[in-house]
Length: 272
Image (tube, rainbow, N blue to C red; front, side, top):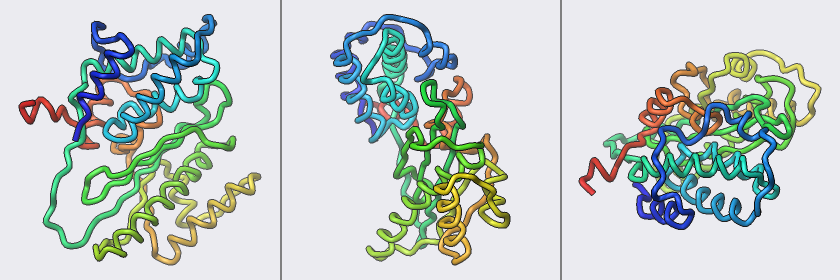
């Protein structure tokens, strides 16, 4: 499933069609790019680009979701640096316009529903809030993903991970109830996270937090696991497919992450 035509429409409308393509959607020196003291520009241009890119990221291009989330932080008072970031992601789309998600059919009677939750601690260039993201797979296929800046400031990486675990768990629960209601049998849903401390706390330990909201989230997740409505397990950072929507990735890791998320050049493979 791809949106090649829509990609080309964006490039044409924003006058990027003749630019040279690049290999990543986000510059690795993102913080320095956004902190550069450059003059402001008209917000309407950034708003238009962000809306179009958001539509693309939501449906078939999770690989640009992190960049779009960053743009949304700066959409009301953009500078020339923000416009440079927009041109960066557009040049990435120029070289990957045919990329999409390959969905595979499996002859399996009981479905595997898995949530992959990840956070990048205090990475906001404006508020020092963390970015959280999750991917949900069904039968191994990505069916839902989300990334956003957290609404609260957390005090540690473990707390940051727990907040996104909570968001992911709620979405997994909703999907589990939906699948059950239409007669699809599923195994106990699994939540995967690459923070060993967060996983350990969810299973065994107590959480020492001065933040009441974190404590409520903690108890909610613990109750689900205790009642066997959800499982949680640690996964290596190298295998965490949600990191593509929470932080900038270098070319090699980006390519690997896209492959794990079943993102391929669908147009080229299908002969389009």
